[in-house]
Amino acid sequence: MHFSSKVTTTLILFFTFIRGAVCVPAPALLPRYSVNTTVPNPCMPQAVSPRNQEDIFFGFVNSFYITKDYQEAYTHVAGDLINHNPTSVDGIASSFSVVNSLFTSPSVSIQLIHQVFGAPFGWVHYRVDGLNPLPTAFVDVWRMDGSCLAEHWDVIEEQPANTTNPHPLF
Ligand SMILES: *[C@@H]1O[C@H](CO)[C@@H](O)[C@H](O)[C@H]1NC(C)=O
Ligand SMILES: *[C@@H]1O[C@H](CO)[C@@H](O)[C@H](O)[C@H]1NC(C)=O
Image (cartoon, rainbow, N blue to C red; front, side, top):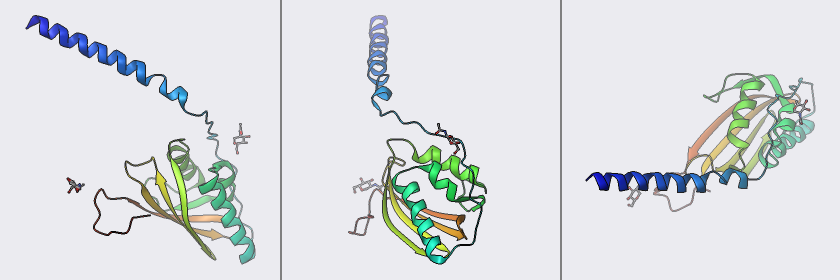
């Protein structure tokens, strides 16, 4: 009994060592990825034509959802952004910080599915992998005020483990 408990302890120590030996180098294998967490200067709303507003919106979509350049994206966000996401508060800093903490990890990928603009609202439907255990659908709705994104709502749905509908979620 004494012997067997010693063996167990040895085995636990051994596997702890193996686990440590395997896990420790792993982060070094990830690509180097530097994140600039300084909040960019916010957008100051200026009157623009509907055509310009649409161009600004799709430029923002490219930076936010495709190149993940949040420094560029947030130059289009108003300082007093109204945010309906329950994990944020109003203002550019809260939104910027949530997005930086959720989406900048190299293991999180975003796939844009639909983007639609009808002044002053833009809608973005996208798939996120690596954030939740299963792929997750997001819809962001943005309202623009002139040249800036001024208000945000989102709807988030993780793919259920079992579905009744034969159509895939994406
Ligand atoms: C980080 O972002 C701030 C604000 O946009 C900018 O002034 C600064 O130059 C950036 N730093 C780097 C290293 O890119
Ligand atoms: C999904 O279906 C499998 C097979 O019928 C079942 O074992 C499992 O518990 C279900 N999972 C959920 C989350 O309902």
